[in-house]
Image 1 (tube, rainbow, N blue to C red):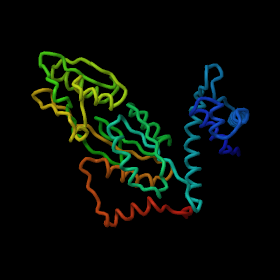
Image 2: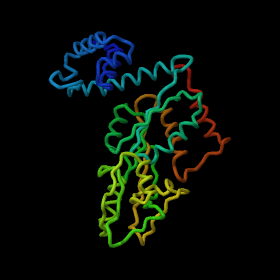
Image 3: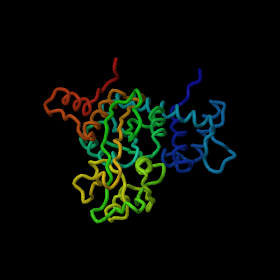
Image 4: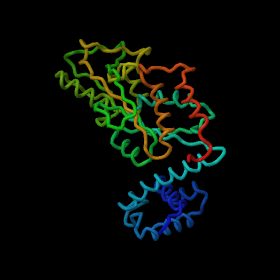
Length: 313
């Protein structure tokens, strides 16, 4: 039986993440020749090439991508075993993926509620407009929890799902002329809010013009505040702000959007489910808050802040 040394897999992941052997060596505290030797040893054990020698830069082969996926899962399980086996668990990093910027603004509040004595004291939020990519990374163990903003029905394994009201936001100084194209600000055609806006306008027979494409919600919100254009928002995102909500006499009504939370089945799933519940309790617009002395709340907080110190039987 061939056993793959875990350090070889960790080296593979480091090289794949930074796409550079020298920087990977620095992050691992090794020399560049040592990293190259470990990758060569791993390839010999697997009897396959992991990196495409014909490509410029560090590019994984098809087999290399498959090995990388399983390597991440093995490393995750390895690290989870170490964390529950030692008397003083090391701080874990909670990897959360989100679609868009809307929900990410609420996540730090959930993280702060864990407290400094939780086993999760480091957090990494990954943002993308590609929901399929987020689900893929969750399934392969690269993300622990994802919060997906979507018009579609949730998958069968969704942990939490709810609807968010969507509205058009604009500056109080912007007067929309029905005879002129609706000025849109957007992150691009792949952005879900862009697709929502265009679909609603086309269905209503309204012309539109993209007046600004920008990479962040902050820049788009500034553009809306300055009267450059309009865009869809979750209603609570612009409550108590200096922006106005367009009524149906100005722009067509927008459909509600769904927000779904999924949990990885790789690693400490029981803990991750409790964390997902805590995140949902913070970011849902009409969530049912548990009282501080509620037995369910006490059990949740106790488990989050005082995880088992030994391996389960």
